[in-house]
Image (cartoon, rainbow over all chains, first blue to last red; front, side, top):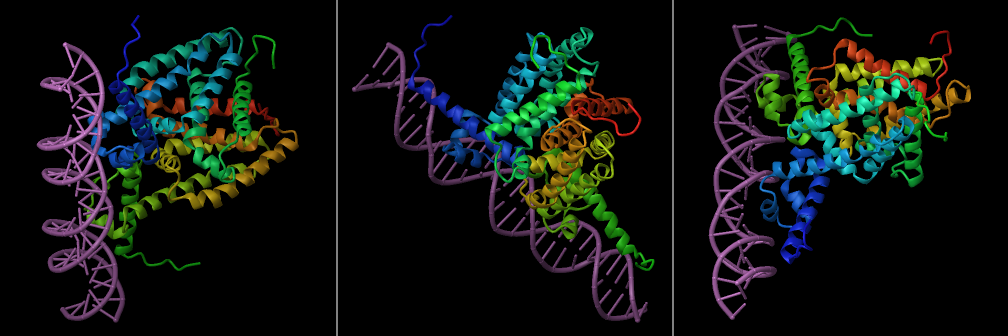
Length: 216
Length: 216
DNA sequence: TCGTTTTCTGACCGTATGGTCAAGGTTGAG
DNA sequence: CTCAACCTTGACCATACGGTCAGAAAACGA
């Protein structure tokens, strides 16, 4: 499509600065909420003067909006698993694994998303009403098909999806609580695996998912 | 214990004002987060001058702390179901019902709690480390006993509890998302019942809960 | 009724915040 | 090298916020 596209030093700097700022913003927004976050805090964390932030992102709202969009992208990408799966064991199983991985790798983003929705989704209401609604309807259809094909018990697809979202996000959003109950230590690799396995087992068991292939 | 305790008009007013302020504060904190909430907003919603708020609650932090404590009380009270139950079907079933009812009746409180934990529990860390830890340990013991008695499958008690918390809280914390996906309308009575039933069915099924009595 | 305690509230204050700006530095194309 | 475009930043501004306070008003006990 495009020639090697000469990358000037300017372009590189811009890209890097935007990345650093977005990363810092994600963290600060997650830890303090939109209202509690300050541009100064984000600037300090990014290692840049505050005025420089306003050069790249004119307003706090704009910066916040970018942060939220990025998370939504990741969130949606995890949905791919769901599609080409032959049945609930593979589809939902892979989805749980993907979402647990997101909770682990992007805890800040997850919190920002949760915060945004909890506060009435002031900046992403349109996403909810378009992209998310479509996505949900599509997956609900898949689930209904699986039910019709006798691959799982007849559960309400929406409530199943809510349960999947809730359970997997919980490990990011309430990570602090979990850590505290874990003796103040973050979950180890092994514990994350156990968590993922638990979630998969209970949900797949609870919906009477029938393996389409050979395993379990 | 005490005589009828003459209720002066002063006492009544004080009590009423504190109630109104706490209620307004709960709502504003839930909708805007701690950082985004302002004393002026809370005062307006309570129908009192701002200075009056500071008469009853010296600082914003103090007011916030009271709000969070109240929620924790309610949250803990729901735990009672768990105790005297003969097995997981009754115990966990009742717990889910209680927590779903809380999500429905106290969505603001639930959000404040979630927000607080998400931001690292700056004001209730001590609760987490004492009361919540003890509570959790106690319930985990009950679950282990049920497992030993063959009343349910051997699942990790902690992950089961997390799933219960996550799933039930989700209907309050992400209520806006759910409402949007429900065509912009809040869940009806019937839909709340269906949600509760779904959650109970999937989780109880997923842990292979065996009824101790006669039903299901 | 009178004096005391408690409650109420408009006006005010210091601070911190989001955002601006102008001046100076850097980079890249011709 | 030159000049225009772009980037950087310390200093600055208006506003809004949490919190204070003095004095008025109301409630109480005797």
